[in-house]
Length: 463
Image 1: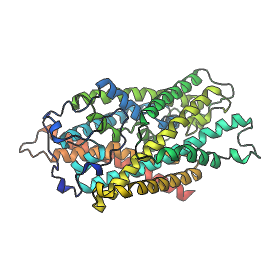
Image 2: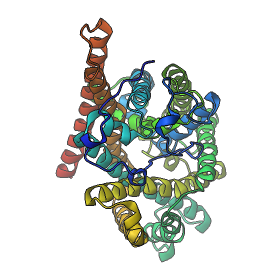
Image 3: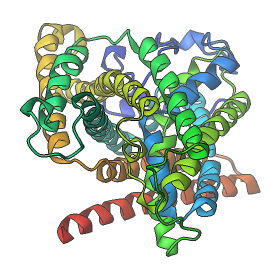
């Protein structure tokens, strides 16, 4: 594929080209993150990394699967049943995969290696800043969701250990939800979040994969061999309205969002070719789809319309197999919080240094103090919000809308700008088709984000 130079003059972006100022976000632990030099990029953009095709598939699956798995049974209920949920996921998967391929093409065209750098290079300064701010808000909201998940699972585990019925009055103060979340956060999350580097990512990733597959297996097994005390609610067979199906989109976007980490994964491959990458992301999304559908279908059919936004909360507290799944989720989320916080902090740090105009070498002395302050503010704000927002469904709805921007809006804008930057006297039909497809992506993403935001505002006003 021929290289297309897009906004190749760094002066057009309004920021320093010092590599220390460019935050490397949501890097997979297996991704080679060494900065590239101009001499490394051959005309075909090959041989820039060490990750094999099979390894890239695993990394993309790992980046995709996570705590969002717990919300898919509720998404099937919101969509209006199994048939509607499957149709919605299959339809969205086409756009999800195409967005990943577009990002790889634009990364190759702009010679950039991270999501936000690609958006900066292809779409310019304003869109680049919006992208970075969106990443910061998304990671902040996801950290809140992680703390809520920890509290949800701890409530169930403590109920079993204390041998008290859930919600029973007169429980000891040390079993209170606010205390247990705060204690866990201060003992584990805060110490893991302060360090400058996060070399433990590889262990967290392995733990997350094991936990995700275990949760899926438990949900499927419990559907075929349910406990006696589990009684399903109404099993919906059709959506109440076409709008109801769209209400499930934020959850699906949150679950499948791996686009921010996809660009460095693509550049870590031994042969980073767009055609090969298309096969990688298709295989990875099919695997993720199987996991999400298995959990979503079996979880929904087990509990029906009464399924909790966090499916594990629908199971009895004294179920030991489910208790192990809860422990897996807690351990996975504990380390995942630190990784997401690192990514958000990197965006804030990058924006601060860029607009202060300070070379990194001159700012090293204050880096530690600034990092500790940023971490404490981030940690305390997410903790306070998690303590007073007990419903994870509300948080997932909001950050799912932002995930739609990463999946649809920014890739669509990149595709439009990339094609418009190709100065050809005669434009083939495919050129116009791709531009139209970019517009379609942007429109779809904007619709999901706008609907999610509107729903959140109206729900709060009505409440």
